[in-house]
Length: 151
Length: 315
Ligand SMILES: C[S@@+](CC[C@H](N)C(=O)[O-])C[C@H]1O[C@@H](n2cnc3c(N)ncnc32)[C@H](O)[C@@H]1O
Image (cartoon, rainbow over the protein chains, first blue to last red):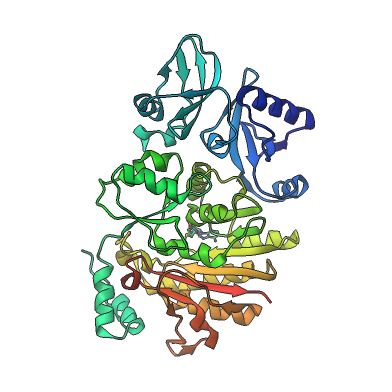
């Protein structure tokens, strides 16, 4: 697995966007990138030790999928929204039960045209990943294996 | 109903010599297993999960007061309902048979520790260990089967496990590699591939594929895996060896061999299910006296699947 720990500059930028977009203050994770996404390691192992393991073992995966970067914004994963549920303060889009059924089925939602950018989706107490609002639609990124229709 | 092979029955009769005991076992293995789930405390508390599931009119029982995360869904559900529920899809619970939860409880992983889960897919116990560690410390979770590693990774993501490194290696080879790197662990789980005699309720086909030849081969592999793992334990560290089978060749014989070769000592695990002591002798081979402190979990004792759990300490 190809892994690159975020440089100081990149980490600073990520933390700045997380704070600005969602009000998240300094999440205590080790951030790194793979070819596909930004991931986190929540454990208490140093970067050097992790680096040594990555170099020497046939690693299939490490830590948790956290976010994908899109147009300078970070689209948080379903599970990242759960880990950070207490920290997320801004840009939360509350959806109805009916919308939740569509959303968890992988469908895009019709939303107010004025909404733009990445929103964290929430139904009652459940955080349900994030979506991208554009032109009256909230685009859905729930992975196939997590959708109700596909299980 | 699949009829067990005569040799399987004969061996089980030797393990359960009392006629009524054996009869109860034989009856129980043909009953469909109960629906146990484990609350994923990395995402939700047992109190909140229970409330939500009860709102859906699921009848939830928490059989063990000190392990509120272990829940039994008592009402009859539609086929697949437990896996299709939104609470499952978003990772609020993991579907796991209660006896399969025992090895991680015996291991007692603590936040901040360094843990090796050597045969980890599909991750029932890795996700449980990560929750007990509150996503801190680190776990190396290994398996050698590609398709099963895919399931492991997807279960880790669903449960928001962030402290785990997944490797794909033969267990023995990985242990050698880790040993060469001088890496040592606080806790090691060795949940080996086994003949699955304990899983008949969930997987009745085991009765068809069952063979003594396979048990003997597995026993050899299990010994090699267990010995390799033991070398990686820190002083004072704990290793749990577990199988979902009753065959003594895969249980007491492996643990006895391990004790002889490594000097690891057995410690009695405190588990919430009824355990019967490990046996002292099988086919004229005697085992160490301390073997009685290992735990044999029988389906008819607990209305569960069968398991074997041994907790070992490096002094
Ligand atoms: C009993 S299952 C493990 C179940 C798992 N611990 C859980 O709780 O979900 C045994 C696993 O060992 C793996 N395995 C078999 N031989 C192996 C070997 N030589 N090295 C590593 N893993 C092996 C199998 O692919 C299988 O996933």
